[in-house]
Image (cartoon, helix red, strand yellow):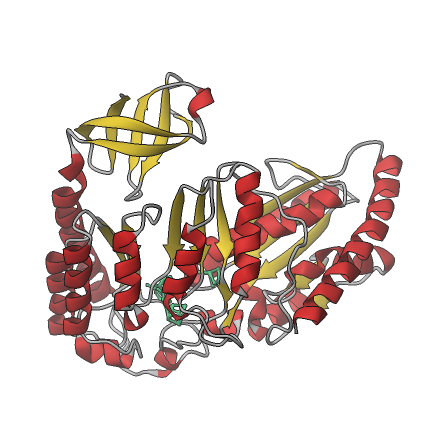
Length: 469
Ligand code: SAH
Ligand code: SF4
Ligand code: F3S
């Protein structure tokens, strides 16, 4: 498998070289550098994929611009909820008009939405101006797909049902010089009954620990101090490798990388969160004091219908364990309101969990029916007015809970990773605490990318105002 991945990577590097010459020719004919723009929807996985896609486009000689009026426009799509899906059609309407004015324009679509047959059928039928369509399993082939498009005059469609080998070491660009996302696994095997991700991202596959460590070491040598380890369910990392390794063990290896200062990870599934992981977090100097632990619902009855494989009590016991071991940990979550069959009692169980877990913040979603998932076929879809009313009540309780939590560090001094000059005030910089909250304090651009000690003078709810000490 590994050899195949390497072979494929060198094949793609050759194609990049050939394709680059062709792009150069076109650029000379046009009398200007060709430009690209990627619009990314959805989660961190998609943003990470977009960095890889940008890496290939830059190797090919395209230059990034800030608008979709570019020579190469790529929409990296999400389909986790219907809203995400609808947005893409909005963008396509605009792109059609841009393309009329620019004969060099290539429009490409990729990402989770493209893994749905109905979507692709609709695009082929009514969106003929789209040039390239590919999915989540073959993003490393971008140069090859562009080459094919330039050689023919037809829509190029390349979709795989599942992934083949993991292709490592292709070019990539990073949005930030000091922090980076790192894929540790792809896909998902959990099949929560509402969720489309396992269908569009394929089965769970972990990367080899050596490849992960090597990639992070390389990033650190280029100035990265914080990494975010990415997977749909990082707690089941490594189980399917030839030489199995646990996520807790991987974290211990990452911890040893010299020069790396902070480690984050996303997302943890409660059913696989181990005591070992809690112990490793407790003893670590680098793992951030933040856990994103999606609960989805507080009702054991609904959790079972959701196929989450834990109960309300199990979840709350985990929260207790985490808070006992790591008292200053910040806890965040995802919650779905209006899952089929949700009763007022079920909903009150969710409210109860929010009160008991005392989240720092929660991402709340209205249930969205996704074709092909088991929940879409469930009867008793909850009426829209009921869902909206519950959603508002949930927001109020979440706000109460975060108000209690977020101010708790006021007056303390804590380490902040400076991320940039403040957008509102050029005399201030903005950075993040270990627990992921933002801090604004007086400072200049030179501080960006460094860790500084800041006194947190005033809590403003979701951020602090501070001063460097
Ligand atoms: N793998 C992650 C979540 C990925 S999707 C996990 O298991 O935690 C991010 C969030 O979107 C989920 O946690 C869930 O709250 C929400 N979500 C997924 N499918 C949804 C749907 N059909 N309707 C509404 N929200 C959904
Ligand atoms: Fe979706 Fe569940 Fe997998 Fe998360 S764990 S991606 S919610 S199926
Ligand atoms: Fe969306 Fe795909 Fe992520 S469906 S949430 S972009 S895995």
